[in-house]
Image 1 (cartoon, rainbow, N blue to C red):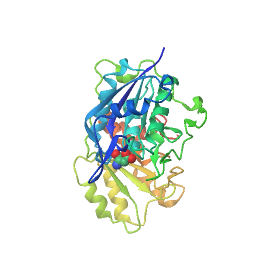
Image 2 (tube, rainbow, N blue to C red):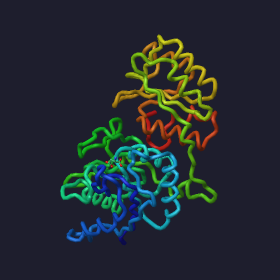
Image 3 (cartoon, rainbow, N blue to C red):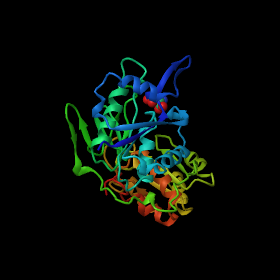
Image 4 (cartoon, rainbow, N blue to C red):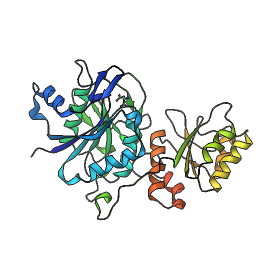
Length: 342
Ligand code: ASP
């Protein structure tokens, strides 16, 4: 029997049209898609329905509240479909993929996020191919994960980043093998996939999709000349409970800046969870390989292994919204759904 897939259009280039001010998201994606598919051999596709958010967005305007809205849209219709495709802008696609991977932990169905660099409404586009392949993957393969499909690559959502602003091959997962490679054939690396949970926790009676405080997590990149005042300003807001420190190389901060280190130490003592990830695109934090990084061990900063910025940021948001403060450091360094190498 054919599977039934829900396609949820959230906005983004894939369904945009040109306006006097540049591309804007417009409603009516389903009509456009059905028109494009009129000539194709669509019997290979699963059955699908298309829904749109009431407020379509350019994903640069994404807020943590959208993650709640999206998870609610999916979980409230979970039993009606065999899989889900989210059409999303590319700018913050990796944030949404990461956030949903935590919120839909233990998924038993594919949730594939895709979009495009050129809108479906244009003659030359990458939209149709991305969407059709995402449909074929969700409709024919057992993929119990939140993934990004883009330009021949199926990537674990919480391992993905947008690396190119204009290339069709915009997404990659520099620290994790692609889940599938799509060329003439579809090579799905099933041994890499997460285990399917027959009864995902988010379907339990009384489960509430997490709500996020948008100010709970801040990001502090280190750079030559960074002053402690910048960190102090960030941490001066009462509702900040987490800080992602984007350090150099294998996790090195400018430890010669004693005031900065004291500020971080004070933050940890004030129960702010500070997580250290690297600015490098590939590789992991090894906090203590250098004396500069060892300083972070002493003050209780959590080493973030090979988490992407998007995964570290959304995981910390998710844990702050759902867990007791004393368990955050431990959970940040454990893999919850394949997001880091332990
Ligand atoms: N600004 C667009 C968005 O993220 C870019 C895209 O979709 O490719 O919504």
